[in-house]
Length: 353
Image (cartoon, rainbow, N blue to C red; front, side, top):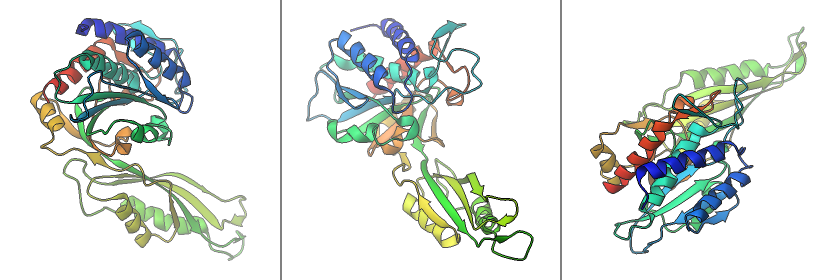
Protein backbone atom coordinates (compact mmCIF):
# COMPACT_ATOMS: atom_id res chain seq x y z
CA UNK A 1 0.00 0.00 0.00
CA UNK A 2 1.36 3.41 -0.97
CA UNK A 3 2.05 6.11 1.62
CA UNK A 4 0.17 9.42 1.68
CA UNK A 5 3.29 11.20 0.40
CA UNK A 6 3.61 8.78 -2.53
CA UNK A 7 -0.06 9.18 -3.38
CA UNK A 8 0.28 12.96 -3.12
CA UNK A 9 3.23 13.01 -5.52
CA UNK A 10 1.39 10.81 -8.04
CA UNK A 11 -1.69 13.02 -7.74
CA UNK A 12 0.28 16.16 -8.63
CA UNK A 13 1.80 14.44 -11.67
CA UNK A 14 -1.60 13.18 -12.82
CA UNK A 15 -3.22 16.58 -12.34
CA UNK A 16 -0.48 18.25 -14.39
CA UNK A 17 -1.20 15.83 -17.27
CA UNK A 18 -4.91 16.54 -17.06
CA UNK A 19 -4.36 20.32 -17.06
CA UNK A 20 -2.15 20.04 -20.17
CA UNK A 21 -4.94 18.20 -22.02
CA UNK A 22 -8.00 20.27 -23.04
CA UNK A 23 -11.19 18.64 -21.79
CA UNK A 24 -14.10 20.98 -22.41
CA UNK A 25 -17.53 19.48 -21.77
CA UNK A 26 -18.37 16.93 -24.50
CA UNK A 27 -14.68 16.93 -25.52
CA UNK A 28 -13.18 14.92 -22.64
CA UNK A 29 -12.01 11.91 -24.65
CA UNK A 30 -8.29 12.60 -24.21
CA UNK A 31 -8.47 13.07 -20.44
CA UNK A 32 -10.59 9.90 -20.26
CA UNK A 33 -7.69 8.14 -22.03
CA UNK A 34 -5.22 9.56 -19.48
CA UNK A 35 -7.34 8.34 -16.57
CA UNK A 36 -7.60 4.85 -18.02
CA UNK A 37 -3.84 4.75 -18.61
CA UNK A 38 -3.22 5.85 -15.01
CA UNK A 39 -5.39 3.08 -13.57
CA UNK A 40 -3.83 0.54 -15.95
CA UNK A 41 -0.38 1.52 -14.63
CA UNK A 42 -1.67 0.43 -11.20
CA UNK A 43 -3.07 -2.83 -12.62
CA UNK A 44 -6.66 -1.71 -12.03
CA UNK A 45 -9.29 -2.51 -14.64
CA UNK A 46 -11.51 0.37 -15.73
CA UNK A 47 -14.84 0.59 -17.50
CA UNK A 48 -15.74 3.33 -19.95
CA UNK A 49 -18.91 4.65 -21.52
CA UNK A 50 -18.53 7.72 -23.66
CA UNK A 51 -16.07 9.87 -21.73
CA UNK A 52 -17.04 8.49 -18.30
CA UNK A 53 -14.47 6.22 -16.64
CA UNK A 54 -15.05 4.09 -13.56
CA UNK A 55 -13.32 1.41 -11.49
CA UNK A 56 -14.65 -1.09 -8.96
CA UNK A 57 -12.73 -2.01 -5.80
CA UNK A 58 -10.73 -5.24 -5.97
CA UNK A 59 -12.57 -6.93 -3.11
CA UNK A 60 -16.09 -5.96 -4.19
CA UNK A 61 -18.72 -7.92 -2.27
CA UNK A 62 -22.37 -7.67 -3.29
CA UNK A 63 -23.47 -8.29 0.31
CA UNK A 64 -21.84 -5.05 1.48
CA UNK A 65 -23.06 -1.47 0.98
CA UNK A 66 -21.28 0.53 -1.72
CA UNK A 67 -19.82 4.04 -1.49
CA UNK A 68 -19.28 5.95 -4.74
CA UNK A 69 -16.34 8.35 -5.07
CA UNK A 70 -17.23 10.71 -7.90
CA UNK A 71 -15.75 13.82 -9.49
CA UNK A 72 -15.67 15.24 -13.02
CA UNK A 73 -12.88 15.72 -15.52
CA UNK A 74 -14.48 18.23 -17.89
CA UNK A 75 -13.79 21.95 -17.65
CA UNK A 76 -15.36 25.19 -18.76
CA UNK A 77 -13.57 27.22 -21.43
CA UNK A 78 -10.86 29.56 -20.10
CA UNK A 79 -11.89 32.91 -18.71
CA UNK A 80 -10.92 35.71 -21.20
CA UNK A 81 -8.97 37.44 -18.41
CA UNK A 82 -6.31 34.68 -18.24
CA UNK A 83 -2.75 36.02 -18.18
CA UNK A 84 -1.22 32.53 -18.29
CA UNK A 85 -1.47 29.66 -20.74
CA UNK A 86 -4.43 27.74 -19.22
CA UNK A 87 -3.04 24.45 -20.54
CA UNK A 88 0.50 24.87 -19.24
CA UNK A 89 0.66 23.48 -15.68
CA UNK A 90 3.03 25.59 -13.62
CA UNK A 91 3.99 25.36 -9.94
CA UNK A 92 4.88 28.66 -8.28
CA UNK A 93 4.95 29.52 -4.57
CA UNK A 94 3.17 26.29 -3.67
CA UNK A 95 0.39 26.78 -6.23
CA UNK A 96 -0.35 24.61 -9.26
CA UNK A 97 -1.78 26.85 -11.98
CA UNK A 98 -3.91 25.69 -14.89
CA UNK A 99 -7.46 25.34 -16.19
CA UNK A 100 -9.38 22.80 -14.10
CA UNK A 101 -6.73 22.60 -11.39
CA UNK A 102 -9.22 23.69 -8.74
CA UNK A 103 -12.54 22.72 -10.38
CA UNK A 104 -12.41 19.85 -10.17
CA UNK A 105 -8.92 18.49 -10.87
CA UNK A 106 -7.77 18.69 -7.26
CA UNK A 107 -10.78 16.82 -5.87
CA UNK A 108 -10.62 14.34 -8.78
CA UNK A 109 -7.01 13.26 -8.24
CA UNK A 110 -7.48 13.26 -4.45
CA UNK A 111 -10.40 10.84 -4.79
CA UNK A 112 -8.36 8.65 -7.13
CA UNK A 113 -5.57 8.58 -4.53
CA UNK A 114 -8.13 7.66 -1.87
CA UNK A 115 -9.45 4.82 -4.03
CA UNK A 116 -5.89 3.51 -4.49
CA UNK A 117 -5.28 3.75 -0.74
CA UNK A 118 -8.23 1.47 0.06
CA UNK A 119 -8.32 -0.70 -3.06
CA UNK A 120 -6.22 -3.62 -1.81
CA UNK A 121 -7.72 -3.78 1.68
CA UNK A 122 -10.01 -6.77 2.14
CA UNK A 123 -11.30 -5.87 5.61
CA UNK A 124 -13.57 -2.94 4.70
CA UNK A 125 -17.22 -3.06 5.74
CA UNK A 126 -18.24 -1.45 2.47
CA UNK A 127 -17.33 -1.44 -1.21
CA UNK A 128 -15.71 1.46 -3.03
CA UNK A 129 -16.44 2.47 -6.62
CA UNK A 130 -14.68 5.40 -8.28
CA UNK A 131 -16.21 7.29 -11.23
CA UNK A 132 -14.78 10.20 -13.22
CA UNK A 133 -17.75 11.77 -14.99
CA UNK A 134 -18.06 13.89 -18.10
CA UNK A 135 -20.27 16.88 -18.94
CA UNK A 136 -20.68 18.01 -15.32
CA UNK A 137 -20.13 21.67 -16.18
CA UNK A 138 -23.10 21.65 -18.56
CA UNK A 139 -25.25 19.14 -16.65
CA UNK A 140 -25.16 17.07 -19.83
CA UNK A 141 -27.08 13.86 -20.43
CA UNK A 142 -23.86 11.95 -21.20
CA UNK A 143 -22.36 12.37 -17.74
CA UNK A 144 -22.92 10.57 -14.44
CA UNK A 145 -26.60 10.08 -15.26
CA UNK A 146 -25.74 8.03 -18.37
CA UNK A 147 -23.70 5.44 -16.46
CA UNK A 148 -25.79 5.14 -13.30
CA UNK A 149 -27.41 1.87 -14.34
CA UNK A 150 -24.03 0.47 -15.43
CA UNK A 151 -22.54 0.95 -11.97
CA UNK A 152 -23.02 -1.55 -9.15
CA UNK A 153 -25.88 -0.65 -6.80
CA UNK A 154 -24.73 2.54 -5.03
CA UNK A 155 -25.87 3.26 -1.47
CA UNK A 156 -24.27 6.66 -0.92
CA UNK A 157 -21.72 8.97 -2.52
CA UNK A 158 -18.95 11.50 -1.97
CA UNK A 159 -18.93 14.08 -4.75
CA UNK A 160 -15.55 15.74 -5.22
CA UNK A 161 -15.78 19.51 -5.60
CA UNK A 162 -13.66 22.33 -4.14
CA UNK A 163 -15.10 23.02 -0.66
CA UNK A 164 -11.92 23.72 1.36
CA UNK A 165 -12.52 20.10 2.53
CA UNK A 166 -15.60 21.29 4.41
CA UNK A 167 -18.69 19.18 3.79
CA UNK A 168 -21.79 20.31 1.93
CA UNK A 169 -24.54 18.17 3.45
CA UNK A 170 -27.18 19.66 1.17
CA UNK A 171 -27.18 21.34 -2.22
CA UNK A 172 -29.72 23.54 -3.96
CA UNK A 173 -31.39 22.25 -7.08
CA UNK A 174 -31.61 24.26 -10.29
CA UNK A 175 -34.70 25.14 -12.27
CA UNK A 176 -34.18 27.26 -15.41
CA UNK A 177 -37.30 28.78 -16.96
CA UNK A 178 -37.64 30.22 -20.46
CA UNK A 179 -40.45 32.76 -20.28
CA UNK A 180 -42.31 34.54 -23.07
CA UNK A 181 -44.50 37.58 -22.47
CA UNK A 182 -46.98 38.23 -25.27
CA UNK A 183 -48.11 41.60 -26.59
CA UNK A 184 -49.31 42.99 -29.90
CA UNK A 185 -47.20 44.72 -32.55
CA UNK A 186 -47.88 48.36 -33.40
CA UNK A 187 -46.22 51.61 -34.46
CA UNK A 188 -44.35 53.28 -31.62
CA UNK A 189 -45.50 56.75 -32.70
CA UNK A 190 -49.18 55.94 -32.36
CA UNK A 191 -51.29 54.50 -29.58
CA UNK A 192 -51.18 51.05 -31.10
CA UNK A 193 -50.39 47.57 -29.92
CA UNK A 194 -49.55 46.08 -26.55
CA UNK A 195 -45.89 46.38 -25.53
CA UNK A 196 -44.65 42.92 -24.55
CA UNK A 197 -41.75 44.46 -22.63
CA UNK A 198 -44.21 46.17 -20.27
CA UNK A 199 -46.10 42.90 -19.92
CA UNK A 200 -42.84 41.14 -19.06
CA UNK A 201 -41.94 43.78 -16.48
CA UNK A 202 -44.99 42.85 -14.39
CA UNK A 203 -43.83 39.23 -14.24
CA UNK A 204 -40.19 40.16 -13.73
CA UNK A 205 -41.18 42.27 -10.73
CA UNK A 206 -42.98 39.24 -9.28
CA UNK A 207 -39.86 37.09 -9.67
CA UNK A 208 -37.78 39.85 -8.05
CA UNK A 209 -40.00 40.36 -5.01
CA UNK A 210 -41.77 37.05 -4.32
CA UNK A 211 -40.56 34.93 -1.41
CA UNK A 212 -41.60 31.34 -0.95
CA UNK A 213 -43.01 30.95 2.59
CA UNK A 214 -41.01 27.85 3.59
CA UNK A 215 -37.27 28.21 4.24
CA UNK A 216 -34.85 25.29 4.50
CA UNK A 217 -33.00 24.86 7.79
CA UNK A 218 -29.82 24.07 5.84
CA UNK A 219 -30.21 25.84 2.49
CA UNK A 220 -32.20 28.93 3.47
CA UNK A 221 -34.43 30.64 0.90
CA UNK A 222 -35.23 29.81 -2.69
CA UNK A 223 -33.46 32.35 -4.91
CA UNK A 224 -34.89 33.53 -8.23
CA UNK A 225 -32.87 35.68 -10.65
CA UNK A 226 -33.65 37.11 -14.10
CA UNK A 227 -30.48 36.46 -16.08
CA UNK A 228 -31.34 36.99 -19.78
CA UNK A 229 -33.87 39.24 -21.57
CA UNK A 230 -34.55 39.85 -25.26
CA UNK A 231 -37.22 41.79 -27.14
CA UNK A 232 -37.78 44.07 -30.08
CA UNK A 233 -36.48 44.44 -33.63
CA UNK A 234 -36.79 48.14 -34.47
CA UNK A 235 -36.91 51.41 -32.54
CA UNK A 236 -40.28 52.36 -34.01
CA UNK A 237 -42.12 49.08 -33.48
CA UNK A 238 -43.98 48.07 -30.36
CA UNK A 239 -42.60 44.56 -29.68
CA UNK A 240 -45.17 41.76 -29.72
CA UNK A 241 -43.00 39.39 -27.71
CA UNK A 242 -40.45 39.58 -24.88
CA UNK A 243 -38.41 36.56 -23.87
CA UNK A 244 -36.55 36.27 -20.58
CA UNK A 245 -34.79 33.55 -18.58
CA UNK A 246 -35.12 32.85 -14.87
CA UNK A 247 -32.50 31.01 -12.80
CA UNK A 248 -34.14 29.46 -9.70
CA UNK A 249 -32.07 27.81 -6.97
CA UNK A 250 -34.45 25.46 -5.20
CA UNK A 251 -34.11 24.23 -1.62
CA UNK A 252 -35.23 20.94 -0.10
CA UNK A 253 -38.38 22.66 1.20
CA UNK A 254 -40.06 22.30 -2.20
CA UNK A 255 -40.01 19.98 -5.17
CA UNK A 256 -39.20 21.44 -8.57
CA UNK A 257 -42.78 20.68 -9.62
CA UNK A 258 -44.17 22.69 -6.67
CA UNK A 259 -41.99 25.68 -7.54
CA UNK A 260 -43.04 25.50 -11.19
CA UNK A 261 -46.73 25.33 -10.25
CA UNK A 262 -46.37 28.39 -7.97
CA UNK A 263 -44.73 30.36 -10.77
CA UNK A 264 -47.48 29.48 -13.23
CA UNK A 265 -50.14 30.58 -10.75
CA UNK A 266 -48.62 34.05 -10.45
CA UNK A 267 -47.28 35.11 -13.85
CA UNK A 268 -48.98 35.67 -17.23
CA UNK A 269 -45.96 34.80 -19.39
CA UNK A 270 -45.68 31.41 -21.04
CA UNK A 271 -43.33 29.27 -18.94
CA UNK A 272 -41.19 26.45 -20.32
CA UNK A 273 -38.82 24.67 -17.89
CA UNK A 274 -35.58 23.49 -19.50
CA UNK A 275 -35.32 20.50 -17.18
CA UNK A 276 -36.68 18.95 -14.01
CA UNK A 277 -33.53 16.83 -13.49
CA UNK A 278 -31.36 19.00 -11.22
CA UNK A 279 -33.06 18.41 -7.90
CA UNK A 280 -32.09 19.53 -4.40
CA UNK A 281 -30.01 16.90 -2.65
CA UNK A 282 -28.66 16.15 0.78
CA UNK A 283 -28.17 13.72 3.59
CA UNK A 284 -29.78 13.12 6.98
CA UNK A 285 -28.03 13.83 10.26
CA UNK A 286 -28.08 10.15 11.22
CA UNK A 287 -26.31 9.01 8.05
CA UNK A 288 -22.81 7.52 8.57
CA UNK A 289 -21.20 10.06 6.18
CA UNK A 290 -22.76 12.95 8.11
CA UNK A 291 -21.70 11.48 11.46
CA UNK A 292 -18.16 10.82 10.21
CA UNK A 293 -17.83 14.40 8.97
CA UNK A 294 -19.00 15.70 12.31
CA UNK A 295 -16.38 13.57 14.11
CA UNK A 296 -13.69 15.24 11.99
CA UNK A 297 -14.96 18.65 13.12
CA UNK A 298 -15.58 19.63 9.52
CA UNK A 299 -17.84 22.57 8.78
CA UNK A 300 -21.17 21.14 7.63
CA UNK A 301 -23.14 23.52 5.41
CA UNK A 302 -25.69 23.87 2.62
CA UNK A 303 -24.28 24.67 -0.81
CA UNK A 304 -25.92 27.20 -3.17
CA UNK A 305 -24.14 25.79 -6.23
CA UNK A 306 -25.13 22.76 -8.28
CA UNK A 307 -22.97 19.76 -9.13
CA UNK A 308 -23.37 16.12 -10.18
CA UNK A 309 -24.84 15.66 -6.71
CA UNK A 310 -28.14 16.84 -8.24
CA UNK A 311 -28.13 13.83 -10.59
CA UNK A 312 -27.11 11.20 -8.02
CA UNK A 313 -30.29 9.61 -6.64
CA UNK A 314 -28.84 8.42 -3.30
CA UNK A 315 -27.68 10.13 -0.12
CA UNK A 316 -24.54 12.16 -0.83
CA UNK A 317 -22.16 14.81 0.42
CA UNK A 318 -19.99 17.27 -1.53
CA UNK A 319 -16.41 17.69 -0.37
CA UNK A 320 -12.93 18.30 -1.68
CA UNK A 321 -9.73 20.35 -1.70
CA UNK A 322 -9.62 23.76 -3.34
CA UNK A 323 -11.88 26.78 -3.03
CA UNK A 324 -15.17 27.20 -4.90
CA UNK A 325 -14.41 30.93 -5.18
CA UNK A 326 -11.54 30.10 -7.58
CA UNK A 327 -13.71 28.03 -9.90
CA UNK A 328 -14.03 29.41 -13.45
CA UNK A 329 -11.74 32.33 -12.54
CA UNK A 330 -8.78 33.60 -14.56
CA UNK A 331 -5.41 32.00 -13.73
CA UNK A 332 -7.10 29.21 -11.79
CA UNK A 333 -4.92 27.40 -9.27
CA UNK A 334 -4.88 25.00 -6.35
CA UNK A 335 -2.33 24.85 -3.55
CA UNK A 336 -0.17 21.74 -3.62
CA UNK A 337 -0.73 21.28 0.11
CA UNK A 338 -4.50 21.42 -0.39
CA UNK A 339 -4.34 18.23 -2.44
CA UNK A 340 -2.49 16.42 0.34
CA UNK A 341 -5.05 17.68 2.83
CA UNK A 342 -7.80 16.50 0.49
CA UNK A 343 -6.39 12.96 0.33
CA UNK A 344 -5.97 12.84 4.11
CA UNK A 345 -9.48 14.20 4.71
CA UNK A 346 -11.13 11.70 2.37
CA UNK A 347 -9.23 8.82 3.97
CA UNK A 348 -10.14 9.95 7.50
CA UNK A 349 -13.78 10.40 6.54
CA UNK A 350 -14.01 6.89 5.07
CA UNK A 351 -12.04 5.22 7.87
CA UNK A 352 -14.43 6.74 10.41
CA UNK A 353 -17.52 5.24 8.77
